[in-house]
Length: 249
Image (cartoon, rainbow, N blue to C red; front, side):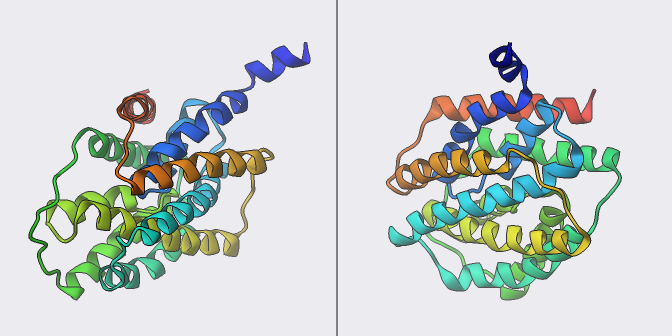
């Protein structure tokens, strides 16, 4: 009877899928918050634990991913720094705010739809990288940082396509920059959350362990120019279902 109750528990399915999601995201330099939030939405997690859970998992997975890409020599500190200068304080501010659950769901649904488009469409990086104005980078970073902190994502799912669309970095450089960008924004947003008091899921430790396992493999293979299309298609379905649930149902 106890085994049957475990299988019926939504946490069981969340934990089973979690390492695959962290694997895929870390392989492209992301922490995976949009994927974790999509899963939590599908399995009806309480809103009051979703934001901080996604941010904490982000810290571990994005940190691993950044380390792998940094070791492979893809990180450009100067480009990262301008975006981070704008994003860190606004991510903290976003972390402080707890908005109405209906509004939160609608904004999250839109961002998950954006993440879905990111998975389906991958702009190619130009061989000739263009120079970016520091002021423009700071402004873009500030905007991404605020919404990242408000919803509970690191912002890489937005920053990466921006870097590639405007040819400000190569594909691998964008992954490395986004990984550290996610880490610092998630940290700032969590500090903001701690300042107002937050609750953690009782299953947080196994979540971290499984996300780490997937993140270690994804960061390693992703930095070595490896990808898994089947996992990507699976994640597209997850994001689409969660976005539909938040925006339509």
